[in-house]
Amino acid sequence: MTIDGALERRFIAVDHPGWRQGHASTLLVVDGGALVAWFGGTREGAPDNRIWSSSRPTADAPWGEAVVLAEGAVAHWNPVLAYGPDGAIWLFYKRGERISQWATWVRRSWDGGRTWSGPEQLVPDDVGGRGPVKNPPLLMPDGGWLAPASRERWGEQTVWEPFVDVSTDDGRTWHAQAIPVDRTRLRGAGLIQPALWFDGDAVFALMRSTEGRAYLSTSGDAGRTWSVAEPVELPNNNSGLTALALPDGTVACVHNPVSADWGARCPLVVSVSEDNGRTWTRSVVVEDGRTPIEGDRSRAPQLPPSDAFAAADDGVQTTGVGEYSYPSAALDGDHLLIAYTWQRRGIVEARVPLNLLSTRKDSVPL
Image (cartoon, rainbow, N blue to C red):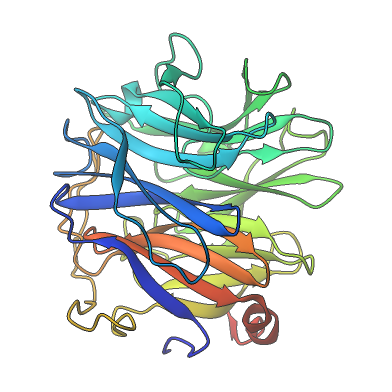
């Protein structure tokens, strides 16, 4: 499949002297513009990894110069931007030499991301990561704030465990609520990095897995308890996905439609569901590894090689060739905005008209 002509893509930042590899972007719509953050350094887990950010004031404005929002003597990972119950923009991010030992830190901005409070730990004495791990928290009608979270224990037997961190006091304290997993039915480490949405009756968590498919769990009590996670017919290559509810009641998921554990992170597509994540159809191809980004044909996309990823507690080792991954998405009027990793060399923004999703959502069954 080729990329639909109604879809627009442009680089947010690419081939920057401040990093050899950039990854794991997060996107937030801010005052008619947008704010994006990601981590960049020598590679995942390297102590020179910082949290970088860029912004644009309007939809048509160019992206600004990349600036550093967080740095230190250890690796920084997985930023997450979100509006908090206090109206501020919250930047969550991980700090630590290893994934199993990282902790979540936070900064806040009350002026649209122009200035930030000093860094502080989200949960005192955190080891393993509290709060959101990749996708943004969900603010509920009852005032609860649900952060999609997970822990990773690496070793001779690696175990991944998803949970939802719940705050009922505007983010001051957090209480971890497990998402149950039947480990007897798993062949790999498990499930991580949930994405949350709410349909007015229940909360849904769609998760990355080692099993070749995404998993789904639901909560009927505003995130306090969760059903046992079950596999759904949405391919997952053990790479990050994101999902959100659309205005027409459907759910969009941005992901790599590949079923191999640590499989290729290409192509990158939007799939949609009309039954809250139980069944899916592929709708739009965002990146296919072949089509140059408009206005910058000097940077050619590439298809992925085999055996591209070596994963460990100190992060994934990869050249990044042919990788289009780790999407973040947000609604902006009649568009779905997507930020994603482009071959580890930078971050790309894609703008997908919502009517393209609604008119194409039955085009390719999964």
